[in-house]
Image 1 (cartoon, rainbow, N blue to C red):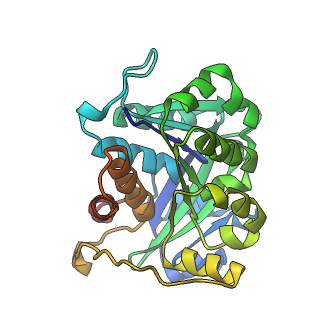
Image 2: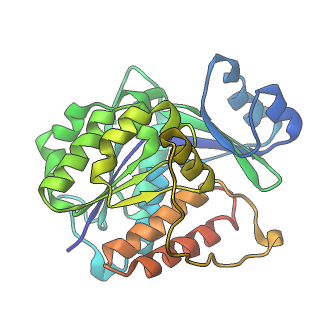
Length: 302
């Protein structure tokens, strides 16, 4: 039965409704995603102390994994060894701390099997999320997530999960961490005739990490990205051709939109759930739209 394995950077989101002054203070753009620099160190305390921030499990593909599992009916579930969860496995690196415990609990609640590499030398990564006028600015401090190793993926107990899965999803942010792991999954997919799905994740990925992304390109069965990410990819490759098929987005009024954080992750989750269930591309995309629509009507990717 089709199963899904996701790989990227597990993070704890620290999110709050901010303002233009806060964005300006830390040099952030209203609808962007960047890696934290020393100048951003004060952002997290600022969000918690001055903007009543909430914390929630986050990190691209981890959100996608939870969303995909939520959309998979029990009849599609695979009972994985020693842990009777669903059909989705998630890999990444966390610290040995309470933030990691929060992420584990979130995955367990969603029915996702999380197999983290634990790095005791670094804290679990976190992402500052500033919400302004229905836009979200993401500033990520990778922490332990930046120390994922190919050796973890190749461990016999982890690689057995790779072998039992039929679909691989890799978030583009992981190309900043361990592109070797992303490529190992791509090569396994090609060798065993499995499905490989890549997400662009952010506009800077196809530009700053073009070489790592290009190495995975021959293996893509599906590529996920929003308009700005697709444009960045096209510009970095001096190419771009409009798609031959359009699939309408589900309509929602502006008044119903609360927070767009994780909307792309939710879309990917719905899309992957459709692929797992062997639905058509049109139906799978519509499932992604449906899940994203639900997500933007609440605070954070829950």
